[in-house]
Image 1 (cartoon, helix red, strand yellow):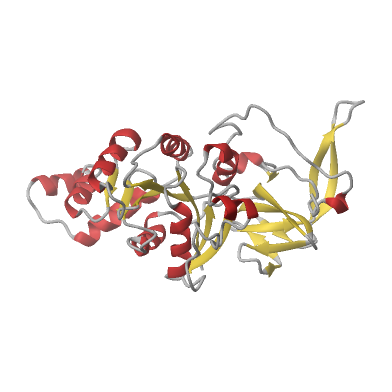
Image 2 (tube, rainbow, N blue to C red):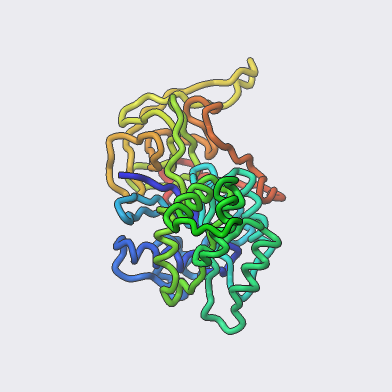
Length: 355
């Protein structure tokens, strides 16, 4: 099965979690879309998220559409949780950026888009909340072109799509200027290729809450965002962690190359020796690997995302294998540098669940 690893990004309250819910519903992953206000969404599962109606932690879910498996990371929109967004960028090959049709491009929207563009992550843009009073798609699209990317193109505007494609191809431009009619299939093929390489940004509009325009976004993920980028040789990055009551600490791992299997021995850094000043190393054995959907799998393969158990207190951001093979690396502080970092740990490991 083909695969897409994507993230959904937005300024707070732009509606990305609601969009995620309806994408899951369309794909048949859930029967009914949850509500942010009622605290029934699939991705906002922490008590504080359901109580406050905001995303605090990035959550990964899986769905399938048109024979393509999609790993989708719903990221927090609030600037206070930018570290979660940064880590998500380590795992992605494509993105959906949600912009409110009423509020338009907001400060965090610009920060997020700049981060995606800097890392050359192909992106589809969804103008959401068109049902609100004061919503204006045309105005918002002009803002997007002026403040984010001049190559943002409304996907349903055939004339603009044709012009954009022809401007990037001398042979097609000559045919276009001479008044020759160009096959729609050829234009679409060229437009999709430009989108998958981040040269253009397809734009869609609708209301996720009213389930309008959501299907077009789902199809755009398959059509306009690229499959996983893979490399030769073992290479993966740990981008998140979670605590399981039975299995202990698990790390979310994006594998770019090679294969990681159950019972595989992994060498990890264990800190600097205070006497010699040299790095100490420790071996850990993979005890279990789960897919994004939570199923037990025997191995994690190049291009896949999964949860790996048995690696102890491996730090988030650790690169497994050869770091030079990573196609992109997001350094901490790209979106925001915290004033103070605090870590709370229990006095004994068996108290982790209580904490």
